[in-house]
Length: 396
Image (cartoon, rainbow, N blue to C red):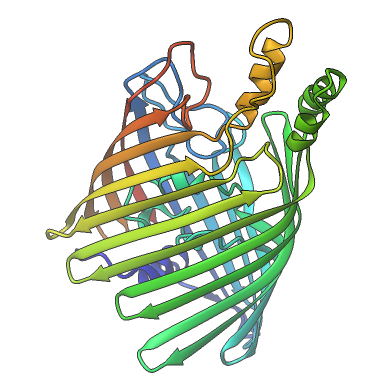
């Protein structure tokens, strides 16, 4: 079965597989779902492979939690111009338990033929796959490359946006602006977007999609242990270093550009992103990836290369590396170091039936200057690490 274009896959995943029910007032309600059932393992017990902001990952023993999830979406048409959408997911995220999360909950008003406004919990368009990144079936790869998708942790905001779509000949241009706020707790820290401004522009021309997005926010990362660390640095006479780690209502920016092509048997996708934060607690980074696949009947083998690097200084050159302050210096310096790594991936997607695809993927991950994006590294861990995953993505 030939895989459909990105927008068609998204429609199939979120709306096209459920027959709507009709009420007496001509409103419609449709229910659809999506999920992934996968096993993931690595070849080391010295560190844990995790997807972004998972509390616990996988080692040599295969686990389901890394790449498995289940989602349900309800769309209700109130009348010709007003609709309601809600989406919930069950997955391992933030804690090492399968928890339910409300990902979307908004009202959408079609105020003109080419203009709509949404209010409520809306997806944050940080990436080219933001609209469908949780729907594994709509993605060629087993998972979005974590080198890039780890850089911006928020999936949604509570706020408002406006989306304008207009055709210029064979090209469709979509522009989105919005604002909102969001928060979550992870690892003893509280992450907050006090306010975020959203700009998202997408141009589609036949099998080609070009996307540019920019997020500008006032953000905070706070927690008791972080306060204790900065207080100890202040008391030891390193006030400037302590202030550089404090992240309270600081300016944060994230810019990303992506390109996607689904032409005949060729599938290609690439993204480039930069993160800039006015606090050293969250380092400035640049990341990118490039994926290429080729359909052979129902099978799509693919390769991917992903890289992340840090753009500002790693560590504190003025803090002592010996003596009684050495442990304090080590912890403070570690917080300024982004997880750097390079990943080469090889995978195969098999669309063995309508609305279900079997995938296998092998990642060879090479951390640089530390443990990369692995969690809970043990002394002596260096890599490279091989990660293996196999599973079924489906929609219903």
